[in-house]
Amino acid sequence: MSLETVGKLVVQHSSSSVEVQRRNDKVAREQAAVRTMFNWIMLGMIILGIGVAMIIVNKNFDIGKWFSLLSSFLILGGTGVATAGVLNAVRQAANITGPPNQKSLPTNPVPDELPSITERTTQLIAAEEPRTTKLIK
Image: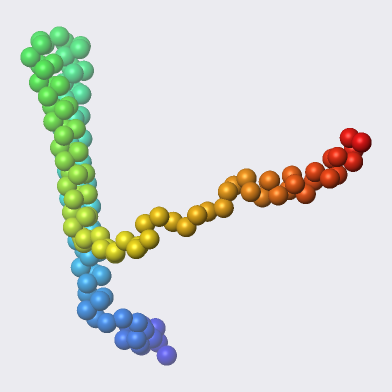
């Protein structure tokens, strides 16, 4: 028996095609979200790198305060672009997974009384007391 035949039999008996298609769509959406996040982060890092290069040039050649201000804005803008890419990917991931499970809360909100942590120690001390009184007498 060839592997292709075995693979087809496993697919027929493991899950429905709708479920497999849904899973494949979810994986494709996740990959698209990660790809978009990576592109935004790379763009932000390029903008940030240009700003850092401008600061280095301004330190060496003293172009002026306006150049330093422009480079600071580029650094902040690059950081903002990268952060926006990450936050957008987090938002997309929340939409991919769907709403959280809406399970009902338990009817008894207060848990049953738990035994004391020191209860067993107290029992052991009470069991050892007669032996210690013999040593004292």
